[in-house]
Amino acid sequence: MRGMVAGMANASPFIRMLPAVYQEDEFADRFVGGFDDVLAPVLSTLDCLVDYFDPYLAPEDFLEWIAGWVGISLEEGWPIERRRAVVATAVEMYRMRGTVAGLRANLQVLTGGRVEVADSGGVAWSKNPGGEMPGEASPRLAVRIRVHDPATVPMDLVDSAVAAAKPAHVAHRVEVDRP
Image 1 (cartoon, rainbow, N blue to C red):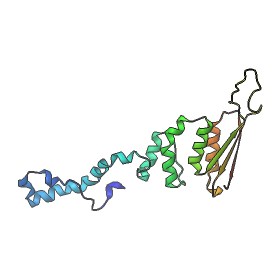
Image 2 (cartoon, rainbow, N blue to C red):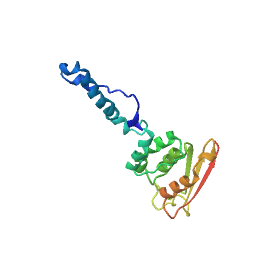
Image 3 (cartoon, helix red, strand yellow):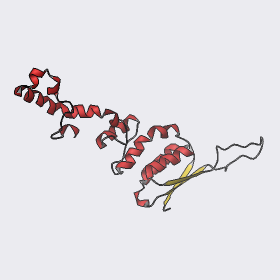
Image 4 (cartoon, rainbow, N blue to C red):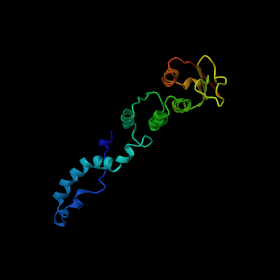
């Protein structure tokens, strides 16, 4: 816990803020020294407050709170680097939600691998009016994730992320293999 750092010194001791007559007094020095000990962690936190809002710099216990701000929950088993990346890219992912590029980017952050997404093309368009409709008649979505260790991919989270990003009537398949 940040408030319990033993021996943390105050960057601006309170004794230096007193008039010179009190700075020379031994009792006054010991008296305000107690305030330095108690308030040093608070002042240190306030000095670094901007870093607490950066997901890449925030303390681990604060990261869960920041994740709540952007409406996501973090998995306990994930490495800290992946947890920080998920929080840092959450707002950008919301902007791209529902698109193939958004699904690809979201899965790359979740898995740390290379993601390929193939859909049936139901949202494509044609330059020729009255021409043949693009895509296939049955909508589908195929996702392939390439990672060095397929056992590290949280399949339940990947499947729920794909299900949340696609239309409900579109069937999907997820494959995980090595590069």
